[in-house]
Amino acid sequence: MQPFQETPFSRRKRRNERLAQVVLGGMALAMVIPLLLIVGYLMFKGAPLISLSFLLSNPTHGMREGGLWSALLGTIYLVVMALLVAAPIGVLCAVYLNEYARDNWLTRLIHLAVINLAGVPSIVHALFGLGAFVLFAGLGRSILAASLTLAIMTLPVIIASTKEALASVPMSFREACWNVGASRWQTIWKVVLPNSISGILTGVILQVSRTAGETAPIMFTGAVFFKKIEAGNPFAYALTDQCMALSMHLYTVTTQVTNAPEALPYAIALVLVGAVLAVNATAIWLRSRLRSRKKW
Amino acid sequence: MSPAAFASSRPRRHRPAYQRVIERLVEGVIRACGASAILFVFGIFFFVFREAAPLLGKLDWHQVLFSQEWYPTSRANVRYGVGALIVGTLSVTGLSMLLAVPFGVGAAVFVSEFCTGRVKETLKVLIELLAAIPSIVWGFIGLSVMNQVIQALFPAPVGLNLLNAAILLALMSVPIMVSIGEDALKAVPDSYREAALALGVTRWQLVYRVLLPAARNGLLAAVLLGVGRAIGETMAVLMATGHAVNIPHSLFDPIRTLTATIAAELGETSVGSDHYRMLFVIGVMLFTITFIVNLLADLAVRGVRKR
Image (tube, rainbow over all chains, first blue to last red; front, side, top):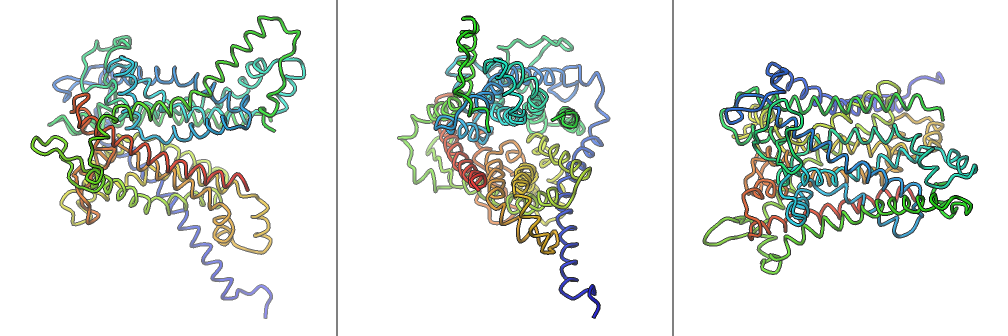
């Protein structure tokens, strides 16, 4: 008998291997195909409606005609405000956890809190925002209350991504800095943060898209079905105003507005998905570029 | 060694006084930010509980938990039975996990073990982008596309039902399972792989006999995080389930979930009314459920780290 002849056993082994590869690969592909299908279908249905004037004019005729301006601007306001609040707190919290915290009960409690904060359903965030910011703090339904709610929702993810970025700075960098006499904060400010800023920024940018897409937390804290503002003016909202938002607008047009043109919700969804995917793709591209440039 | 291990190294004494003051101030701010996470979690529980509290004593809990009668606006006889809503949430979460777990674990194994280089990076990026699609867009897809697809493929009168929402939830929770599951597989020491390969196993045998048992806890955590996400999802299930208070008997029955009920009804209640407070009671329930699920996931992950 030849030494390398295929036995029934090894044939089965080989067949199983190939089967596993095909089945598992198919499962991975099953994740990718819906993404392409969705984006493709939204483009097919919605793209004809999209133009610059569609983005820059206000919705009219009970939201059946006109553009997206007030919703688009509202989303931008909410995202910028939310991240302006969440990013500093989140980054400093991560600095605490990675650079200062010792392994004690307080640190474990903070870890537990961050994990649970990440798991709180978005609608519970909405209830919290309504109870705490709108009613208790007396902010009323406003951009401020809505963006604070969004800020608390994004906080745990920013903490997690920043912590990862800080942990990737080698210990020797810090040691070298301490050895020339720098204090803890000087070391963090001059060495740790500059070396991890790319990772921190990527984490924050990825949250732009998540914040922009959220609907439930803003529904009862500041977003409204319709709000008239001056078209084309980027400062048309005040922070105490209620606002429209793209995600909320999509919900309104699909479920509340009757006789809307068929392409309209597709166009809104396309703008939302397009913006979200563009921002995320940029962040991912940035991350891979910076990773490949790293010298340690 | 973590930077924190050196936390006892104090700034030197011959530093100028103002620098020492700044150092102290900055440290105080950083500590406060660190502790703020705890504050926020307690804050969420406190403020949701605070709005719910006045009603808690008045509720007939047996009716609340087991009755299917959700008539919050009835004039004659108001009933707050969330039994059907709980069953709705559990059924749509369970069904979506039946779909998502095999795909999530399978895709994680494929990405982690069966492909390398460019294919791997592309797949990971695409799965990350899938996770970025907002839930409202999923809901819209469910309402406009899946609705018709289900009506065309199955003998169902309406396409907005348990199956529709479960498929959407599966697609939404798979990316998180893949990324956490891949981390769990990556955490299995390479020496395990080398030892198995030295015995002449194929990659499938390696996955099935060595990696899956070794990464069991991490994969469990990945599944639990997916469950947490599915329970808490609001907008997609609001739009795709059909939103009828109903105990489902088949895949094509419309259902209603706890989250969707809050989202649909909170806008119509007046602040301080019993109906309003009941929605906050549901919020407390949701907070508690997801808290427990996340705690279990954390314990599972911790099990991985210990070894």
